Image (cartoon, helix red, strand yellow):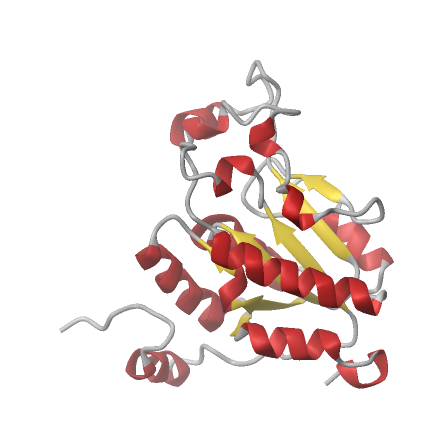
Length: 223
């Protein structure tokens, strides 16, 4: 019988560890908090892309409060937005993901949730593809802040979260995913991709661990 592909399947995880997966990247010396695509199109259940992300939103607002309280944790937000004509969407994207066409720049669909209370010093990065690194200035912003560890939060686990974690690893960053701070419209896709992210690209940790690390003083935060 095939093993269920989800994070807490210890038998399957043991199989992956035996194959050389699921090592730990751990925490580095300077952490940034990245909030991916927590905007109207993804978070309103009546939207084509939407689902109930109230749980991840609560976790993210808790992380934001602690990060802002410290004052030395860079915070970045992303959204996806395109011209109303769709002229900046390539043909394969329009064909494979036609939900991209209504993601019009400046519309409420692509506007961040007000609960996130984005501050002027917290960049909002408009990304054209799933990874927050692809065709954006995120890499240069992280390098300029000497960040080596990225807390990846938001949606969707099976798409933009996974793609961003893969890019983070490719660029040499430690990526940490608080499990309660990411979400997906499909529970099975969410669980399967958390497993793969944890096995291949990032450390998936409980929200309590991420909060405790952020709450530590700068002198004791590095591992």
